Length: 254
Image (tube, rainbow, N blue to C red):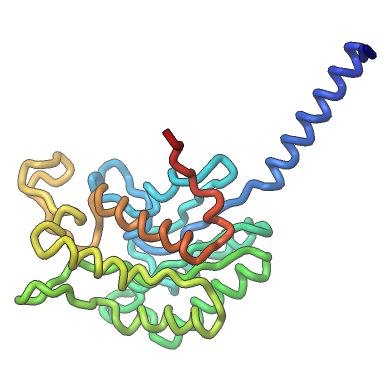
C-alpha cells in the first residue's frame, strides 16, 4: 500500500477546498427586485405592513442573494430619475436576475410619479434591454392587485391599462412574464370580500401600536398577504422553467 506524505495530502485537500470555493463563488447570483411599496422592504415602524419581496428572499439556497431595491411610492419614471436604476445596471453580473414590478404609482395622474402610457412602455423596455446588455435575466411582473370588490362580491380590476402594457412588452420582447395582477385577483376572489382583509394591512383600533387608531389599507400587505404573493411569484418561476427555479429550496423528504 502506497502512503502519500502528509504534506502532499494537505496540499491536495487545500486545492480541493480552493476549487470548491471558487466554483461556488462563480455559481453565486443576485436577484434584484425593482418596484414599488407592494414589493419593498419595510421599516419596523410600518409593521405589520410587509412587502412581498421580504418573505421572497428566504426561499432560495445559499447561492442566491436577493437584493430588494424596491421603494415606497416609486414609478418607473421616479425610479430612473432618482438614480435608483443605474446602480443596479452597474452591479449586474452575467446570470443575475432583475424582477421588475411597477404600475401602482405610474398610473395615477394626480401623483408626481405619474408616467404616461407611452413612457411607461419605454421605461420597461429600457429595464429589459439594459439588463440583457449585462447578460442578466429580466422578468416582468404585472402590478399586484388592490383589494376591491363590487356589490356582488366580485373582485374588480384596478390596473387594467398598465398591466396590459406590461403583458404587451413581455410578449413583444420575449421576456418571461409573471401575471401577478391576474393571479392575485384570483387569490382575492378565492378568499372573498371579508376574509381577504387578512391579506392586507387591515387593523382594528388598538390592535397594533404602530397604528393605534387602526388601519384599512387595501394596497399594502400583511405578513400573510406578502407571503401569499411571494408564493405566487415562486410558483411562476417554476412554471416558466427559469434557471432560478433550480435554486429554490426544496423541502426535505421525510
